[in-house]
Amino acid sequence: MSKKQNPGKVFEKNIEDSVEESGNWLFRVRDVNPMALKSRFNIPKNPYDTLIFDGRYLFTLELKSNQGKTISHRGSNPQIKPHQVEALIKASKHENIISGFILNFRSVDKTFFLSIEEFVKYDKVTKGELEDTYKNKVNEKSIPLAICEEVGIEILSVKKRVHNRYFINDFLDQAIRRYNTRRTL
Image (cartoon, rainbow, N blue to C red):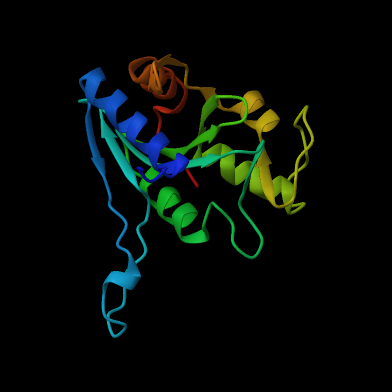
């Protein structure tokens, strides 16, 4: 009997395969299992887990997948970690780098790109530092699907037997059109 694969890892592999099929370059930063090393070693935290290059722009991305309709960014064990946000902000300050999250909501089979700029704006609204101008309800500790639908870029896909194939080139083109200028985060 085969062991059932983690749905988040399946999602990451589907993105990886889709990028490969799109003709773009991808590098996945592999997580190191701290249990596999001796306790005296300090394991650095990965800043983000995926790099995609289309020949003009470098995308620094953190991929997240959740069964529900929200992805946590605050609380005792958030899916989006503060060091990931900081690293994406730092990368986004450079010309021709577009940074953000690819958020997969498995219960509705929808995937969105949320730029780091949109994430920071949303985070400030949830902290009361910016006025809430969203049409949909904000959540202090998580990003709801409805907010992603409102401000994100949907990454369309088709299911091939079991696994999804994402329209990567369409997503990259939309993100470049929207975020191709240097940001001031």
